[in-house]
Length: 282
Image (cartoon, rainbow, N blue to C red; front, side, top):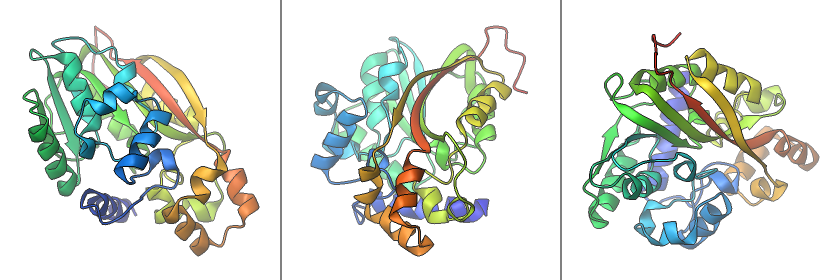
């Protein structure tokens, strides 16, 4: 099942990177779309117009559910790692914050996304950014090598989220921090939705319960785990999304149940720290 999920996620996001599909996940705050619509979506989830105007338009696919860069308190000279960097939007924004003395590394498992991100960095003349092909469960980075980790609506797509947090802990320097925006559940979904790969790729069925998500962060070894914000979704986010509509039709879920399920999911912003006297992940 995990192999099937990764294969399907990679294929779906490769399609988005090649601009063959207008949409992927089932809520429009997690949905790739046209440049104009992507800009509107991104502003709704926390990006400023100034931030979006300062990067190549092609870097913004409207795939996020928040703006981790705005939360990360990045400093000049920081080394930053972005989990699931996509077309590069958060990496490019982070690059401006860390300056020439800093460094930003984007990791994505989809080759087409890596190619697109590298092209966006080239177009924008970013010299302090690099993109690496790899999985967030097996990060292509050395131990204790980065100051901050950011991620935007990606960890929910991993079939092994606890391992993602253990890897994040491993590559962070003692005292480093993780700042992520992600989708979690307030209560369990119906079994047939949980078992749907299409629903998984759409951010919902792969999401953990909120308490389980935060516990996975704790168990990786992080301290100071805190939820800094929480945003609910409107049923319109799903009802307007063709990918979601296709999955729901296949699952034969009535509209009333769809509206109820939307209330189960929220976008949260989570902050946590690797202790200065870190002794390794648990």
